[in-house]
Length: 314
Length: 300
Image (cartoon, rainbow over the protein chains, first blue to last red):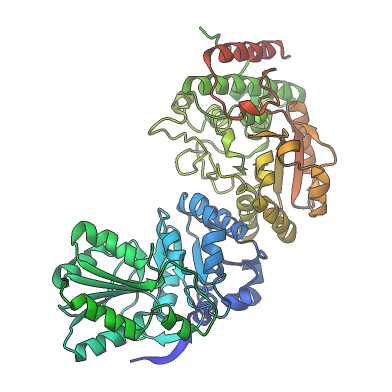
């Protein structure tokens, strides 16, 4: 089912170019990483609508906010870590407080800036962005969902955070119905265990679910592309059916998808839960795949955690 | 009983119609002093809010809304309007007082300042208060936001002016200097920084907390077009003169520095960091009000 892997950042750069005629009010801002985020091509084609502000993330977000008050549709780009930490005050007090239609594109997210090490690896962006009122938080699982998220975000009233992976990842949804912001995508139907996954680990969860099926375990597999507002109803329906929920994310388990799911289920349908993600620690440099495996995000780990959850508690 | 401000001393709408420059300056001077008294009364009554930075900006805000800016209070979102971003958001009570008297919302609403369910938040909120262009309070945002607005004017082919009102605290923030650098790169037309340079911040004199001098030289070194003189920010005539300079400029971005006094108008509050945001008790209010009123009565 998967085509050759495509890097989300490449797809995003191309999407900005192809959407430019349809959205004349779109402007693109970058903080001296446009060759990395792939917004440079847009800047070359539309120099009057491209603003490279240098390494000044806070300034970039507020400039975009000012533009948005006047009817422009800014897309701000930098590494997710710097966008969500260095410009957190700007995202909260200016963009979100005022419900301004600014698209916050957090690139090189998760562990995907793998060789640059812990200083660049964005494993807490979802925790921060999820705490921002008025903000929609989208974690696409492939380049198809990413481009769809961008198109939808350009038409929305309020701000949207979109999480982007640096590296080539499997294309999963080329022939699927388009991403629906706020709605879970059901990938498999099963009664034994719910797996809720977002982003890059989605392809791993699909493979793990296939392996589990061979062991006689039917997984209800939910792809949660919108972390906020989360599709509480679909989560509750699935948890009511299976009673066991495993979450999988490329993010710390403190404040990301797992926490979001737990917040919903603990209040509506308390279920036995497991959370796969990065523990409360700093990560390190290395190959992307090796890092994901070392920090517990792999097909094998999903499979073993699923089996653990299925074992009756003593 | 506090003495009421007479209509003759402070009649907002006659100011708007006045064509004679000298008379206009005199009227703005009285108007600003009247606003100070109103702000003092509100802060005293509510027991919360910031006197120092509000009093510091009275003449500037009065001149902007009653002379300089092209705005439509009955149509606050008119796309062609001039924009003011009040980056020193703690001057909110003065901003609200000026906006109310300009006709953005009823004066009676001023008594809801900082109270539950009010449109007049402790610091300005653009979604709640008509006429507020940007929510501020956390310092350092204003210059970036104003730069964005001015760049939007260029892209959208509009001719509005974008002003940002900055205080000492704003100038401490690194983001302000990021924006100053970026504005000098992009050079949007009609972007003007107005610096309410009272040189006192929350904790004390700026020269002790974080010295900003030599400020004009700093801004010039960052490639801004800085007004050749520092204007007296408490003389309405001088403030009007400063905008004569602004309106004849061709080189952007431009900055004007105003020498001001925190807590202006009350001898024992002026230049005193304590009155940045301390609650005003009954005795202090009575004494301060008497001083402000005396000055108002003595104005030409």
